[in-house]
Length: 590
Image (tube, rainbow, N blue to C red):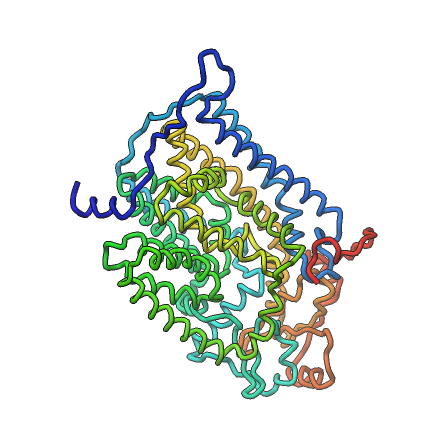
């Protein structure tokens, strides 16, 4: 073994593949071998949890919270869960039960190992990264119709457009100043009356990334590109953690690229794929402390903090940073801490300058005791399970069970997942729209690392050949069954919004006005370029003031969309009156 390999092994010790738990039961015993009982229980537990989730999602369909109604402004999270999760969770439950039966019948093959170093693993990684890029790029067009569904997604392009004009803020034309509040969503766009300008309410790095791609008309390829980078980074991280096993690295990227959440989110304009990519690159750098590039990790971290919300990277990185202190790696601490502090000061200055007043309501979205959060977080956990590659949740539970037997970086990966998930128990709001649990998206690389530790444990219990077969079958089923189902569900939901937006933006009038109370979540259709140069300009007629009406009259011809127009375009305009209970008591935020 070379000195480099010795250093890597010393820094990252691994638990043995063969466990003392591989003893077979007595002669003539009909029960499952001791080595498979625990995995079978985990699989059955996952199946039961999914069945409970299915029952809950079906119940949601019978109450206002689970149905699209224009009167309810904040129930997208419940509607999507009610619509999509019965089928999605059913796939997980069936797979888990079949896998449990397979382990019961298969007995134990502990100690039987297959080739740990398959040839051309790196080439296969590059191939899979390319496949991910192509699939995500195609899905952006076919599944999402090249449409940013939510205001969160739209705001990144809004700010990118401002950057392409060489500015940090866009000045509102004087003719529109009196009507500015009716032109964009004020919760996401920050308007500065002192200089009549506005900008996105988020930190700027992701918008800057989109500006690079938007400048050449390829903004739809940014997240597919970031997804491909994530595949390469996760492969590199697994190779660093398990240098003796290319199989582990292939298992890691196999679980990643067959994840419906990973692939579908890569088709969107959300910033979460960027969070995942930078976090995965950070973890790849961090996982080789014996190399000079280890000290590039805090620079990547500063970029990750400034992507859109700082908390995503903070939650991800905190366990790893605390480990540096616990291990008394003072040289690393003296490099990491000043860089992170300088980065935090930079982004704090940005927020103070370009997000004036944004901190007023931050405390209002946190609650120490929020009675809704146990239900919401249980739903979020089901979303993690229902949108992951089918083998991943089981392997992650198995890996987490080895917490005190694995090396520090795997422990920290688990703590990163736990901290990211646990933080939102104190968050007042649900995620609203999302494909899978998007607040967890930045920690998926850590989730995969924990699952690979579970794969090693499963290999010790039933033999690596059977463990590899389990992963391959799970990944193939995810890719051939789960992913098409999820893409069909998403496209069906996005289609009316994309169609309506296309029709609105193709109208020849100078102004298109509508009442966003006529259709469910139609306020997200109110999108204008930040300089109000493109026509038509889309405005809301809700709460129009006389001065705003006068401003609109000066700016050209107008077209008013009615309730019937929105209905014909496929929007959700039905007001359901067949519920006797108050929707605010059925899980909807106030």
